[in-house]
Length: 209
View 1 (cartoon, rainbow, N blue to C red):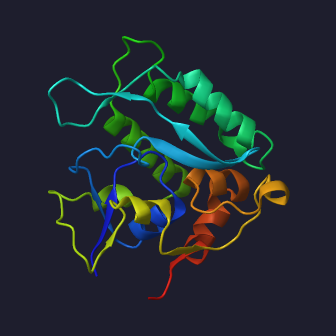
View 2: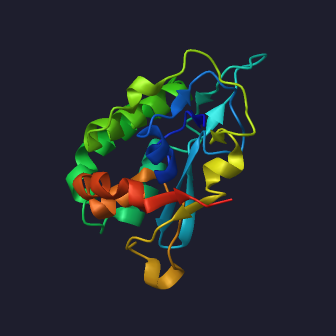
């Protein structure tokens, strides 16, 4: 069965589980509005929260958009820091991740940064942090959509529809319950790379049809 993944920043656990089992990444697809192509889901003090990386579209272009400084890098970083500052591993990654954040996102209106490049930076950082090699999975062309495939380019599948997420302890779980389908950052900050690497295949599974 074919499995295809979209390019998006700090993808969710099921994206990584598929990538580490040979799924191909499609960097050639068109940008999808209102999707995780430019946002991540986290489990914060208000429950499920979205961090959006604002974009601006070039005129008369169907290419992926540029990032916009409309939502500042400092603001989105503060949201992440507020959600995970007390997690077991946030401090361990804080300096290098903050540097990545400020380098990859625009800090002022004329700062030209690509959404695609930002997504790749986050994927490469996660690969290096966890010892994964999904950079080898890139497709040379955009695979066709196939009803028999696992295709996370579809918004519902990327959001977690059809997937089971096994609980792990989250910081605000006592208040909001377990929030499934979060960015890889959620489990990484709580479990650390070694434990996450060991448990990844047990944390997510496709529901049986």
